[in-house]
Image (cartoon, rainbow, N blue to C red; front, side, top):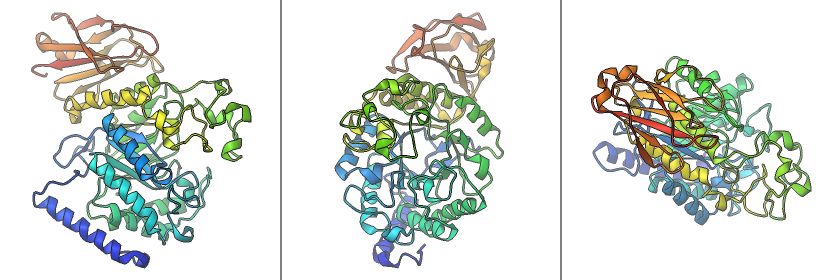
Length: 493
């Protein structure tokens, strides 16, 4: 639908709307589309594709993708992510790092005079290019219309605050019309909680605008601040299709508790951890930085080298998030009922180049960060959860006999509702007692394997065909020696 505020670009907008209608009709009549829209299954537990196959959300946090990278750099980054098995790229149109007033790589601002009613066509042609490339690579873009600092908040950023209910609706309609037929999932919020009713109504208006402008029924969620869940404000909103939480930038976050909360909301909706601890980010970085100062002055001058890379690691006394940490949070989330997990790297979210000022000091630049070990581990995460019918998976702690304490040693387990398979994640390669009571009538047909989350390789496990309770020990143990037990039943339960 056409928004009357955008008269400066009507010819192109009409062409885009016509193209969207043609693509939509082509798909309805049996044509092959570049991507299948994602929707929620009838049970409200999972995301599925148009062919009803489960969609496994393995995301990457690329908040500054549209704002800071050239087209050639964007292609390099996206190809790398496709090769590593990521399925979703999360990026922001009006970005966090002064995205309204600082131009993109080509010198283009997103808005004329900072007005949401005057989008700059040159800027959005760059966004178009990236969205097209995402789609061509078989990925999905998790598109944030704006970072949350463009609305009133108790956590002001670069801003400026430019949105109200009226222009948020119109901006949403513009984006929905332009990208509504693309492989896009919409993410409102942008790292901010809801301050008051005016802000609440503004986000509602933006969501309604996206729905108004979109050719297809859009899939929408909300990205809150750390340790918060979208459901706290919007679970009953008709536009909120699935929940998202931000578990935050610490080690051993209790993501299973966020997941349990989401499972208990009614009606049931799928949920995703949209921002966990980023690989290479300083743990509790906010305690060692002065965010009242410009980027280059947030840490003492001796902490960074001439390229802006961290030289004095000791300044951040709690250390840094490791590959093990991002693996652990991924498996904890999925086995606690999440349908998705978004990996992140501290250099990549801000697309930091050597020599640039960075919002949070980094260990590498964005290009070197693409091949960090934690990013490689995401391929094994996706491969595992796509290897069995993902839509059947649900948490199942009954597989673990005895005490299962929360914290770094928490063992997460899940099984298929039809009894065809189960996964058990042992974060430190712990000796544990497996409870096979549910499979007691089918022990002779039960196959078991250890999966190494670092390599994706499997090795067989010998089970006793006569014992319901069995003590098992993974091949190695200790911090960083996590293992998955994979159970497959020939007949189910």
